[in-house]
Image 1 (cartoon, helix red, strand yellow):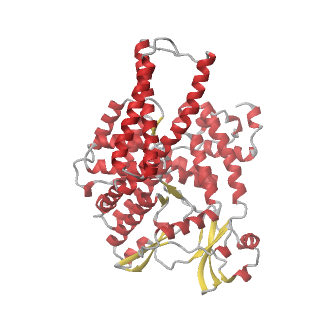
Image 2: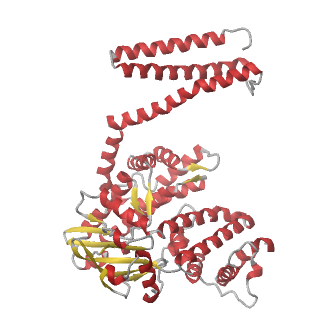
Image 3: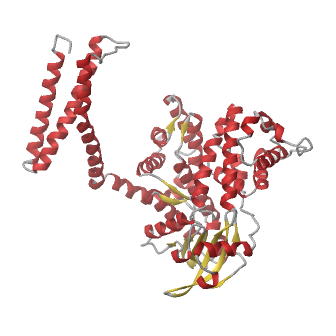
Length: 549
């Protein structure tokens, strides 16, 4: 690593600290290969390493502070890239950060809200309920039009944004340095990891995003009484301060000890996540027990979800492909599983489809043929993602976040209710969603969307044809034939022109007939016949010309 590159580092002292911690925890060879060995003090000795790689990574991230703890938490959601033993250790990372003294928090709150704490809140507990890497939470009472409301106030640490930004710059720098110097490290995609971390942290640092997420979740579940999300009080919130409803509930395991039904909680949690993922395409990406409270009666629990800064999204197309994957698994159709996973992902190289399908078939033998109650959804998704990765199929982050969310809910659900059958719980949703997919309304929308795209193509075709003819007139148009005869090339060109003219003419005639709305069936047949005849006549005319165009 040349000195010129080191001159581009904004905080060389922090870089020395990072490199030193990595070397301390047994990654000295990695530091040396990346060209940063000169930054390690000669006095520093590498500790005797009797721990696994995953343990050493976790300890290093913890020592480096909040930014790196958050990075580890986000990386733990990528089973397609990170080995399972490392993910197991990264999941142990907790935001065990001492709270900020209230003397530093108070000025930030008052500056953000434009008034003193005493003017906004009737009561404010200076001792935080909880503390994390980005901020901490305090209980308070807020005066509203409905009277005094118990709330919690989430406050950012005063310097967290600047600290995160500096660490992000260093992480980008380090990721590029590692990819340049260590070719095999590209399998872990360090730059992509930092990009995902950047997006997640940027979203979490803006509490307006979390407020918007809470209101969107509340809207999506407005008719469901078994789930709730905290109400946001915008008058006492900003980008760095978030005031929300206080839930006087129990943690999941405490609720079970107090007599709540484990079966009811587990089934309700699965129902909530399935709606979020497959109906709304907008889901809580980190539904671990710390972000859930149990309210209501023991036999009719109400699940309250908090900490809504990190959310996932699934496009309608990705939702359809995921449902295809689940349905194929239920039908014991390994080819369907392979096709669905291929459609979900993005090939990064040429795929040997026969070998890929054989790999999926081997994986599927672990699950297909078993009763649904014996199949662990989380294990199925993990094995399939691992198989896709081995064949160079890159799985989108939204799907991976969905998989992690389902794994979390399934794992906790089976702890409190061992007989939980996730497939059985989701079956009614899948049946309804499949019916909706093939409903006349959905098909009509898809057809209209397809016709709209084709009509745009038909509108642009005359201009493109004019450009081709102008090139012909100028002698700038040439036909290159490769590995075939001129006649075969001309036949292929003729077929493509014929197909294009048929489609364009059909769209034109169909549009005119729909506008007229008279004698629809007979007119449609006549229009299509006329379009076919016109296209056929033009094709014969073109192919029968003896002289070159």
